[in-house]
Image (tube, rainbow, N blue to C red):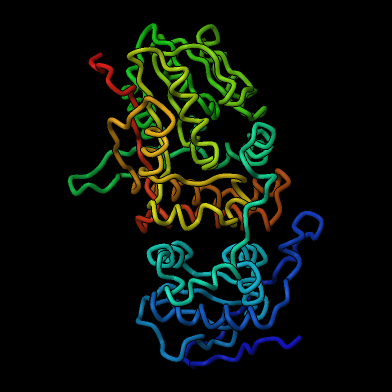
Length: 442
């Protein structure tokens, strides 16, 4: 089968950049990273699409001999996508779209001197990366989500455990001492920019949790249900207020460490950590809190998730959620697409839009969205701190048994997510849900 040409279409004075030796992915552990798919026609189409994207976005796509993919050079300071193995890159991109793009990065076939700038440029133009006249090509480049990832009760535990049960020690390498794996809320300067630093991260995570607990009206004697335990920090702070907490998780590793941390803090009598699917929640609660959990549910099961919140909420109670959101039109365009994030990071997930949340509430519950506030820039800074910490502790990641392909995968995941928030394509919001018609004066 004929391979597409990798000769440059433009020349610059840039000398070829020496490439570091590449590692060969373990085919048993990374079968789709170790194997390059072959389709000459799709590779040629992918090459033409990337050339078009580079011109419209102002992206500098460098080839191994120092040439450029585009005929004219982009402006100085343009973000750079540096192809180390163009043949493999275009075959992967043609065969798998964005999944192939991610796998090619894992295989060290492309890189960037400023990964975040490059990904942010792409995220900022996500809606127009494929021109409208070529949207019909999407069916060539996008796969459907596998049935085994749908958020059924049987699949949900496996989906959650595939991410959160990787290793508590791994997460401890890049999270702050609270072990909080969601957006922090930093203080802001007079211009509105978050003041983010590693030293501030622990306090910023407490600020986020305290705002959610305040939003839900949690105080001494409150009966609280938390859906999605994490490693227990929210339950700890609720218990410190004198609340009685039931917290649900599907991760055995998280449950063990959360129980240990809760016991060490002296709150074991107030917090009950249960290995339990949200659909099996029982009881009646004054406050329900859930942090970045709805994204893992899947659209088909949002009615069940929000109906559960409605069912367990006591009269006059309040629900405080923190959720990553995306624009409604992009959610609709991507809801049936199998993505690199779903394949390698969060199986079965889908980010909701605010409109989708409101539609689900109206159709399946007696709840309403009463308040919301966005913190997208704060998530970008949270992710930056995690990404830098993860990179700085690469040797310790290796010592835990994670190889170079995993490290590149995790770096791309953190950078991809950061770029989504920096571009404004993604937001993270704290939402207050209350029961329609009830007096919420508390």
